[in-house]
Amino acid sequence: MTRFSSANRFRFQFSISKYAFWWCLFFIVLLCFVSNHLLLSDNDRRLLRNRGKGWEQRVLSSASPRSSTGSTVLVTGAAGFIGSHVSAALRNRGDGVVGLDNFNNYYDVSLKHDRRAMLESSGVFIVDGDINDQVLLKKLFSIVQFTHVMHLAAQAGVRYAMKNPASYIDSNLSGFVNLLEVCKEAKPQPAIIWASSSSVYGLNSKVPFSETDRTDQPASLYAATKKAGEEIAHSYNHIYGLSITGLRFFTVYGPWGRPDMAYFFFTKDILQGNSIRIFEGGKGGVVARDFTYIDDIVKGCLAALDTAEKSTGSGGKKMRPAQLRVYNLGNTSPVEVGSLVSILERLLKVKARRVATPMPRNGDVMYTHANISLAEKELGYKPTTDLRSGLEKFVKWYLTYYNQSTVN
Ligand SMILES: O=C(O)[C@H]1O[C@H](OP(=O)(O)OP(=O)(O)OC[C@H]2O[C@@H](n3ccc(=O)[nH]c3=O)[C@H](O)[C@@H]2O)[C@H](O)[C@@H](O)[C@H]1O
Image 1 (cartoon, rainbow, N blue to C red):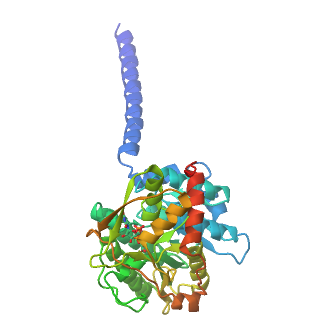
Image 2 (tube, rainbow, N blue to C red):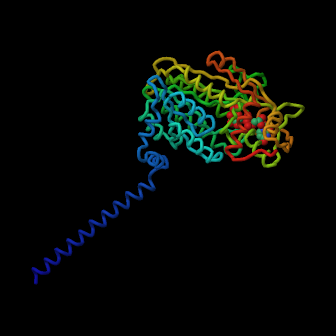
Image 3 (tube, rainbow, N blue to C red):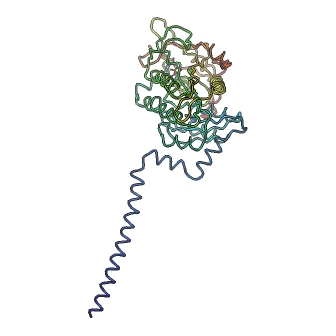
């Protein structure tokens, strides 16, 4: 009897400890699952998603130039307007290109996905990620030795800065600094070419705008962040020996463009019969832009990359002074906004419903006009597309892309 009950007790204790074991195991698995889902940062999760099957292999094969003399370029904002065109041009001439884009919804995301599809068909892989994601950037630099970074990711748009100022700080300041931090630590450091803006000239009234003109009167937060970017670039060049070239783009337009820009939404509104507001300066003042066609800008970007000297630092240490440049990339022939609308009317064969509106205080400036002699001399930059020819190409693309026909 005693022997029987002690055997039973043993079996009972054994089964209890067996259950305890399985319960412990269950809780450990549950804990792992919960911590994986709750404690992982968005960044880590995005990285894990990106790093699905073959992710590193895709990055590596996209980064490989066709010849041993080709460059290996990280293009930020690769699914954007200028970024997608520059990525395609680099790839077409044989450079290795890895794209990076966060596919934010500032404008129609499907346009960005379509640009991505176009690039993927020519062998450019775009990593879905943010320039603020230090983990991801370090990972990319650990996989690939980039010779250049073409930094075109930004929060663009002059007027939107009044609606969402934080997005400009996040992309144009924090994101830029984050990228520079990773670049300065790289061994060896890449040369950096990045998108500044004509808007840095702000309220400057001396025309045409030269690189040596004053840029301390920004008219919008967008302009202020681009100007700040130029000063940040100066400090990283000075301290760490990063070779940095800033390109001041002048109202870039063309196929696959940005729907938030006037020429793009004017086209849409004219076709839909909606009225368009044309800003006018007071006292007979003219509102005009030095509209610059995308293919000319792409040539300027590639020339800036080809003439960029190597950074002189490595692993955060500067060896000697490095190159620091800023160039205007414009068209040198400003056109009034009203004339742009007349060209669109002729191309679309539709009369616009114009509403003349005094220029609101929204960060816009009245007039831009680039002096491009420095870019001409040092980059061989020579824009060749006038506004009519450029808009003709844009309208052709627009009608095909949106599957529309003009009203005859
Ligand atoms: O060079 C730059 O650095 C910037 O160029 C571009 O800014 P902008 O030159 O302001 O272009 P965009 O908005 O197309 O307005 C064009 C014209 O239409 C006028 N405009 C605009 C809207 C409207 O409803 N009516 C109107 O008359 C308006 O007053 C202006 O005269 C980029 O968007 C910007 O991201 C930055 O890259």
